[in-house]
Image 1: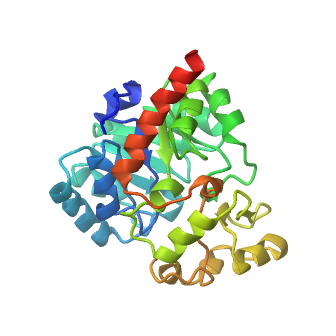
Image 2: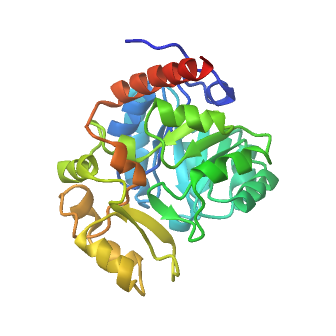
Length: 312
């Protein structure tokens, strides 16, 4: 099955076939998964939030063996341990960077001066305007439905995406609640020119996470995620509902990072009570595990079918 292309400023700017970007999930967004995304026509992203730059360097080398398609790197600023992270990325020959979890003023100019294309992840209109002031090439606008670390004053994608698109001229990638062609069409109707998928790709066949996590996503209802730590201290986040996170939802925590405990046991050992499994609300719409290429082909086909249906 080969669907009609979708050409936008995002595909032209990034040199990709499909306007779909993969979320930069710590420890997960590495070469095996990210190359599958790039080979399927999207933009694979390698994470740096793990702080394991030696491993990240090896993953970038592996990417070049696994794909000849474009890929990028994410800099999650709150988790940067190496003050030379910009030089590290430039030295790897990377051309596209997403920045997140911090002030876009910090790295954008240095990355741009080196000739890189920079998109910043924003959870609010104020954040978007700050990123535009910093000189970014594009925005990833993430509603509160998405999994991971969040703005405690979360705004739903249906409100946030058109609000930002009305205020900026750079291309916008919609994130939060995106997993298929219908949600992609909805995001484009709101003004976006690309989409970012996290939980849908997290639960794909190529995702390296333990099958227990994938099974939990497939079984989840739309109410089976929790929004934690809204009052702080530290960041808010959205995660899969478990006994641990249900307790945190009601009792809170003085140290939310400490609650992650054994991340490796959660992600790759399948013990979902050993920490926190960051997951978006869209888990309630995911009913199976599929290869990335199939997810993308079905997304683009359904996107076109949705537009055709709406045009009647």
